[in-house]
Image (cartoon, rainbow, N blue to C red; front, side, top):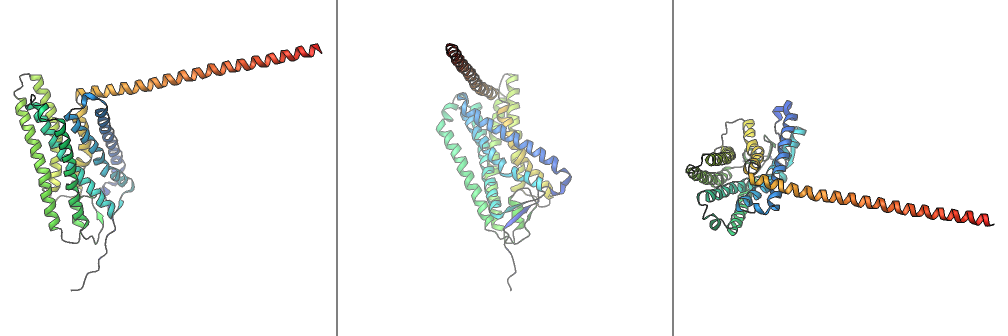
Length: 355
């Protein structure tokens, strides 16, 4: 059998939303606004939790790491999406595509671990409030954070390594707005069976296990909330936990539909819309649901803002005082010089009259 003439693909062409050419400008404005709000909200959370001592608790520690992760998670895909909307197709090198894939899978897996850990933390705080300080101590929090990050790194490295070892002979057009696992495997001209099985097992291990752990924690929380005698307290807790569960369900549901139970008969545009939910929408909802609706956090934001404005006010007053002092000094110097000149003129007039 004669070998086939194949050429190795060195770059890919991301097609993005090319079938929506008349909506490109509107989509660019919408995604840019969402991206700016996402970055701003998560940076505010990281900053406020760092500067307010009252928020140095396990819940806010996990939230701070989640917000830090969300900044990088959304920055992995959205800037390239925005560039794609402006140029109607974006070229990306093979190495850059593999790097984006690695970071995306790593950050996605780490977010799943953080969501499960945060749900477990809320379960302990609500269902075992008296034992909570002893169960969720600072050393355990640090270990859970470290395990989440390192497990996410390992989860992201393996699929990216296996995808990078596949053969890509052409075509090089990825019908997506970022380098994702399914479209890359569809473009490969080598056998992807082992890669598909490995990614399927990892998806079940990460997505399904984390989702059921998170869901189980909220089920226990809800059953504990039902025993609250206060109707207003029960309603408030149900509202908060319901919002958390809604965001978690959107994130896990869309991810599971893409990686655990993919439907090859779905149109590529439907897959793109599903991907928008876990790459663009949930990073925006997380800071709103987990912190900006929290009374203690909003008070901490006001406190930090007042402190910053006070510092700037003192600086402004200091600058005004220094400017006023400079004005009076210069005025005194000018008066002294003018007096010296007048004295010299008077002495000159006297000298002339004497002569």
